[in-house]
Image (cartoon, rainbow, N blue to C red):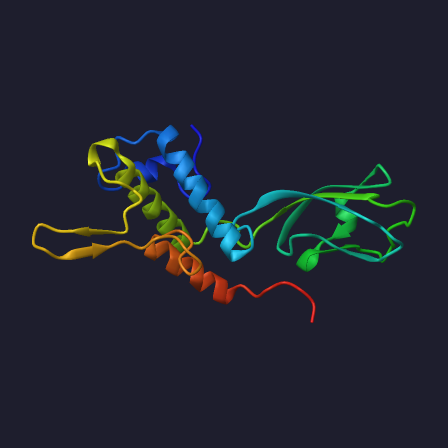
Length: 195
């Protein structure tokens, strides 16, 4: 059985009113929320595989596209495999341990495949927020609910009005708990770049 990136199908099915949802129903909204989290935070939250093609250019250090490198998988220089144990990738900067420079033979002569992510496992607050948002979306989309997902408010039998949060710039998912978690990680994840 396949599982979403941040939680298992069984964990979601254990939530109230969720035992009848299938893997095929759970995976799409879970993937959508996971993609939104990582896009909005600007980093993979758990280890994912990346491949960067770089110019050696005679440099002793090459900057990878992801700073939180967990492990190097393969490295080739001028189409020749390099033992990954001879290299380090601290803070996303690839270097030879002995200070060797990368050759300036041709453009795009260094290919690096590696695993990178902010955390080894997804933080509990993100996991919970994505799982509950997935649950809420699944329940709201059940055909027997008969509720138009495009509505922005609803008048109750008692004459009150319930307003709904819609996705936007400050609430990328429209699910308050998940949007709050995203905002907290946006504040705590420093932007990448050079001064």
